[in-house]
Length: 280
Image (cartoon, rainbow, N blue to C red; front, side):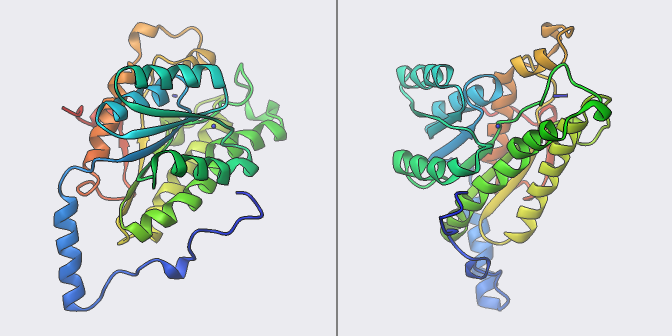
């Protein structure tokens, strides 16, 4: 088991997204584009949320190691800047943005700052999430405000940020969006109700994005990373044996391998990281 400004306009309207061609010549163009995308997808500019520690930090490091310029987003500035400094010291390019993905007013600021720092984002990883109150309560003891916060960070925040960034991806016909899910999205565990339903909603959000943007060159994936040795897991299950949990660095390499196969793996897929090969 395992973080829109009301005064801004959307980047594009739904009707502006190029529709899948229907005539023979256009279809030939689509096949040619698919042949191009059969080559490994190598993101130039990536935005990773929840990147101050755990899987988010591991993903940022792995992407930077493979040549992507990475923007790291998380609420806590000090650990976030430490991860960015480590990446830069090793020859990568990383920028830290201290922000709260669950705050509606910060969405456009995050997207705008990221684009200004590294250029158009072609990989967006929604890793930030919250468990809510711990120790985890049963649903009968879950406050409505706590449930609302979990949904705001784990579902609504990713929706807002994707809404701002994926439109530009579609216009460029290039992009990948990864949603970090959980097995709690498909299994009902006592006390994991708020978190589990947020991840189930996130999975369906990913599938719906994929269906609506089919043919635009933007791929969407939902990844269950499995149980990892992270602070979040320790907060949820303090009695767990860390040695029995997956290393976030290993999971990050597998997710990067999935991203590289964006032209091959069907958009909208939900995958388990343990079943993915590591990137070479």
